[in-house]
Structure formats: structure tokens, C-alpha cells
Image 1: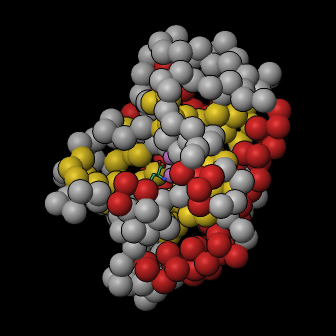
Image 2: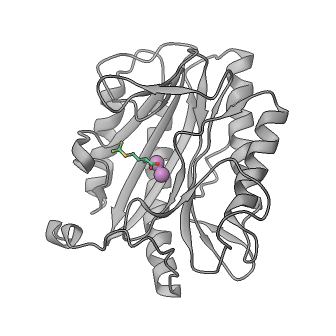
Length: 269
Ligand code: MF3
Ligand code: CO
Ligand code: CO
């Protein structure tokens, strides 16, 4: 699509949009490309590779598929991916810094396909990683999975947050409060804010046709974060390891459809 179509896209209204069956078809295509992009980079996440090399691979892959990298130029962001290693919570810049054996790294991509946004992130181990790093990745993935399992018409956004928080804290990890999931569709970051903590029955009621992300950030230590002076990079205040997983989903008549699902995305690699 032309750049002008993107610029004319709808803006946030404060209402949670209810989408049509045709809109689901658009999100399937966007979600599939986001998943294929993160599948594609998997073999490149190895010791010695600069994270900007991975960013370039992702950008070229997205453009080659006739899509647009949503983050490039978004609020002044100058990369395709957010690449967040170790104690970086989110919004890490790809750079010339090489990955090192034992790092754990989140790669987050958002693609735009015919105006629809597919937003997806995974954790990647770099070579052999420590058992506590492996455990953090597994807890984060399972926390996201439990949040997704709470999605069906009649449940609330608070049910999603509660399911995540209860599991993560029982594993003696913490849920980051400063960032949340979001509605998406033709808009990248739309209403509502999807909190990864909460209480059962709180918040808006889930209805078929709602599209949003579930993207918990989980720390081995305390939940507090700080944003570095570059204005983007969020790190844990206590320097503890942090992990994140993200899916883009739609509420169906009976439950949830995961637009960014891939058989290659598993917590334990
Ligand atoms: N993909 C991120 C999210 O999950 C947003 C990144 S915005 C950027 O919402 F500008 F940093 F790319
Ligand atoms: Co997101
Ligand atoms: Co994302």
C-alpha cells in the first residue's frame, strides 16, 4: 500500500473497536508475516552477530514481502526491531554490539500488511544459557499463555492480567507495570491498555471482534524499570534479567484466535 494510506489511517478514539470477519482475515495475514519474520531470524541469533545485522535482515524480509516495518519512523524510532538483551526490559536499539554466549534477547517486530498491524515478540537464547535465564523465559511464556487462556467473551481484561500476575508471582518473578499491551488493528497502539496484572472481573468485558496484544514483561528481580537518557531503552532498576513474549490476538465467539502463532515459537528451544 502507499505511504499516504498509512498516514491517513484511523487514530485512537478511546473506544474498543469491534472488528468484522474481513478484518480478521487482514489480521491473519499481518500476524502470519510477523511470525514468519521472527521464524526467519532464529538461526541468526548466535554469538558474535551484531544486533543491527538482525534488524537489517528483518527490514529487508518485511519489505520483500510487500509490507512495512511499523516501528521504523514511529515516534522517531529509527529501527525495524526492538532488540532487548538481558536486563533490557523493552525498546532496546539494534546496534553494532555483538550477541554473546549466554545472553537472552527479546526481538519484537511489528509489520503492516494492507494497513493491518501484526505485533509479535519472542525470547531467543544465545548459545548455552544459565538455568535461571531458561527458567525466566519459560515463566514468561507460560504467563503469556495463561493470559491468552483467559480470553473469551464475557471475561474481562482484569481476568487476563490476574491470570498472568498470579502465575508469575507464584514463580517468584515479577510483572513489569510500566508497559502494557494494547488494542491494535489499523491503528498500531489503540485502546484499551492491556495490563499484565489485575483482579478478576475488573476492566472492560471482552467481546467478539476485539483485537489486542498480550505482551507481559517479567523480571527475575523487582518490577521497577527506568528509561535511559536515549528516551527509549527501558532497563530493570535492580539490573535483574527481564524477558517478554507478545502475541496479537482477536476475541472470537468462543475464545481467542492468535494471529501471530507459529509452530516454531516455543519457550524451550
Ligand atoms: N512493538 C512494540 C509493542 O509491542 C512497540 C515498539 S514501538 C517502537 O508495542 F517505536 F519502539 F518501535
Ligand atoms: Co505491542
Ligand atoms: Co511488539
